[in-house]
Length: 181
Image 1 (cartoon, rainbow, N blue to C red):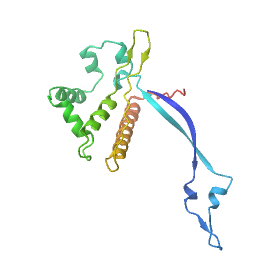
Image 2 (image 1 turned 120 degrees about the horizontal axis):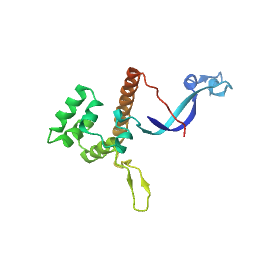
Image 3 (image 1 turned 180 degrees about the vertical axis):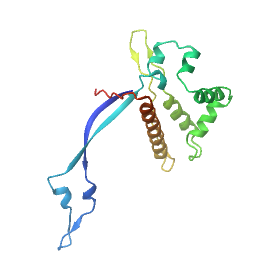
């Protein structure tokens, strides 16, 4: 995978969350005023693109893979599950209803997020301008309409997929390269 982003430093202020009380009754946070704050380095990624055809990467778009070649990239269990899903006439509606089962309603938002997770198809115009296939969603609504719940659950879904991806890499002993752009 190619991760596009930037390195950042995050101050560790966990010790400074409890202020101390002075004798005059005012609060003073001695940890935040000290000069020896600890910082953690992190990588803030703004996009991830897979470069391996096993994970649906760019190589799949450049080559016309046969069904047998795609089948060879998957385990038998994955292939059986995909085949079962392909026979389902209500696949799209079933995926939408299973995406956020704890949120009632908001079917259109669920459809948009589902399409966003699968991604779009990159295109080129007649003039040669290349358009990314990314789908972006802006959710606007009244309070208590589960806008933040969608975001939280989507982040949990992505983190779960990244954890599975890391386990898959460790099984195959591949190396994860993160270029800084």
